[in-house]
Length: 227
Ligand code: CUA
Image (cartoon, rainbow, N blue to C red; front, side, top):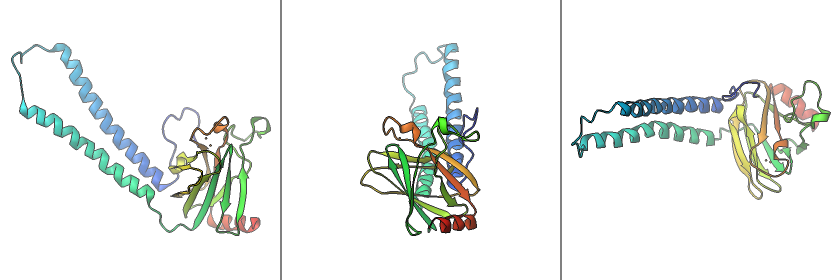
């Protein structure tokens, strides 16, 4: 999760988020190079000494400064497309979780295992324990196995919500009457926090998501205790 003074992306907990961070850094580097170059050129204009007073056209330089930016954009567009298709790929998931957005809580269904289903509400500040995270902890966490491919099906019961976990690189809208799909792979154990990120009404800020990433045998125990 995000902690104090962390203004950048959260540490990744999945290969896809790692790729997203690589792409972010790559795009930012190109952005910085362009900004420095254009900034330098604009600054140097203050010291212009009209050596090209009678210059009216320059076909060559026009060609260069049209084609060069197009090529630079390709260096962003192609990795972006690669990542887009990578995010959409489903690699034989071993568990499927269905999350349904409501005003204003999430409910979950483990349809693989004899229909385990429960609601997940935010813990109000006045009921929070000392080690709880305000506006972020929930009463019933999602438990999912680490080192496994997981499929998420997202939908909503009333208005549009968005199931978003920054550390996993997951952000899928839940829309009434539709079923959206995504997948992720958690490469470490821990708690991964998320929030709804579609303005869904008065208590939009108060429907967080908590995933408990556990080893597979722990997950099997959890499942058999809840069946
Ligand atoms: Cu649900 Cu915002």
